[in-house]
Length: 366
Image (cartoon, rainbow, N blue to C red):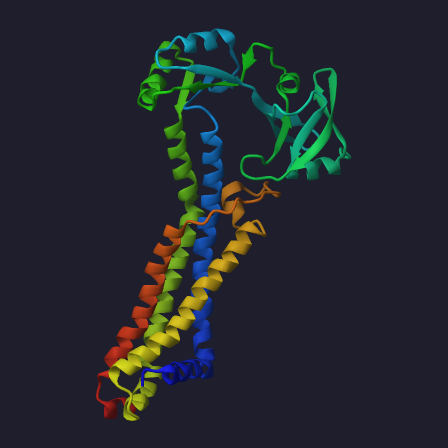
């Protein structure tokens, strides 16, 4: 009976009993949707952070005074250059500007391509400034001075550029009120990667007020922060897991209940045990494969086209309103999700179906 007609019969039987399968389809799709959406968000955020980290040096050095970061000067720069293994030290200007009209801080980042009269703003900052009639230019209030700069461009917001104003170094120093020999932090270039850890440990011993952060340590922090993000993140997985086992229980009960007589009838009209197993495999494969791929497609659109409303708050907070996630798809993780959901689902159908198929037909028909 295993031919094209058999497959056609399996599909027709599935369509006839579609109401019985729709519940399983929607529950399974919802579980996969939640799990993959969370993974898409976390992988996208982590990817942007790691790309930004890769553009920095191997070690970042900051000045910690009384639990607060303070500016560094050229004296520290020259001293760090004397450490064996350090090839170069680059001073960076970076900080936050208090926008008192909305009681929030904008991240001020240096963009060397800008001239002395222009700035770039991220999309969320641009939308906010429009509310205060700053559409073409923006006024920085610094002590008793007013610094007016043209808004040359609005850039898309991601985890790195969100809540950011880009200026050149000259204007950054004016806005942040930093002297010409002052820096927010230093980036160390270390040619020999085996020496990074020793250099990072040596700097605080020489200068107790300095904090040295190696790139591998920050990368590890990003992994932990966005792979297991807080209790709500774990709750989503627990809810999904419980829902999945409820679905499996429902499927097993369905096979032993309403499907019991159906299997007995099929056996009585000449279906072999292997035919019944194949029939159930075809029907439920259509359901579970369809739900799996539909859920992944919807999850992809939800995260990367609609910017994951509601779920993004778990990772970024409610204050983040304009942000675009960089598309990142982890094929290995999707494969693992497939293995640990699709295979158990099919097993929960096929094993009970096999047990019923080998029972005495007369007993099942009672």
